[in-house]
Image 1 (tube, rainbow, N blue to C red):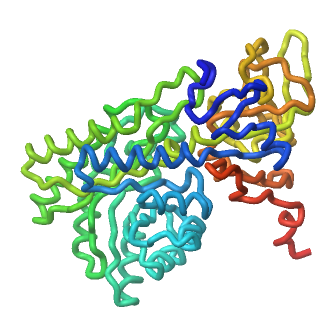
Image 2 (image 1 turned 45 degrees about the horizontal axis):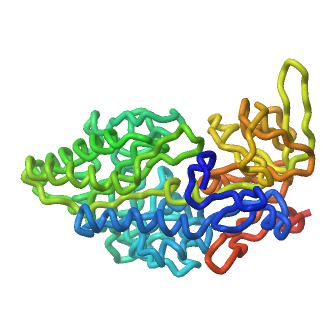
Image 3 (image 1 turned 30 degrees about the vertical axis):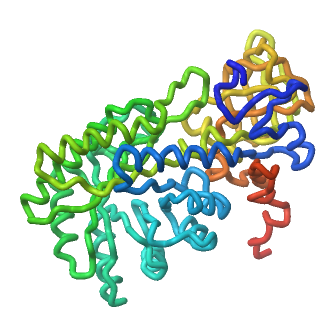
Length: 436
């Protein structure tokens, strides 16, 4: 382990090569090609256990940790979540279908989304999803009618906007009043939705959900959200006589993308939050609810990396140096979307000093197809392998085949060595749905 690599599952071997989960990244490239996503199974499982153990230790196990599958979803990842005793947060028919295909227990699934289609709601009812997190009044009415037609009672939670400012990028801040998600507290909309859900004959309101944003490095906004939500649950009890039994606090816990990032150890969240829950409930005279957390990025983000082959190194004197790779915004759109930070290193010389400042460019036909600007990097030459660290979340899951570039495969490195969990998309795959 070196100071240059502040991630426990990454190291530099005796050849000077970057390793992930003990596997030489150059050997991975030799076997699987580039671009390539590689992920450490041990790192993923340890993060799952850290959250689950913290729930057991600080809240006596009276809750559930649900993996937010939008961060990275495939059958193998759903299987890991199942084996580690987690629940699962899904937001589409595709994620729900994947979970079912992996044999994930439906009673531990939460179905989110701000605009679920009738087809998706029908699928959730057919599969017996444990909780449907309703986002708006239209959805509540549709779900009530669909459940009544099937002669079932649909278990629902309501997504609430707690009005908490999470200090993060505006694109991934979701708890404020001006958000496409959920019911607003300030306007009385949330209380009205609660009353409608309680009156609906084919709905069973189990509790409330909130999510204040993503990539958050502070605990205080989560503690504030807990206080706001519990005070609202107390108000609901006084207004309706119903003490809701569940509180879902969402996710949003930050990870280290670059050395300067300093994420809070993930078990600290539950330690602090549980204390706030207990003190608030004592003050309000309200029973402590069943708690749900939904970490996604913090389980898989730092556990993954992406490997590319360098093509051209283009020096524009007095302007910048472009290092072009054989991937780009198709396999990682996050820099193009919101200038996300990443750590870059030459995989064959990971321990060497980074003596250049470069712009890493992709191969798509877009000037904005960049993976990073003004990033420190070793002097690299065409043909070398470039590693981009902490790409396990929102890279494969947001990937596209723009310019008809096939999506890369995902390799999971475990105790028995690497194995492909998502195969490389082929040129035949790209035309499989074309009708001629």
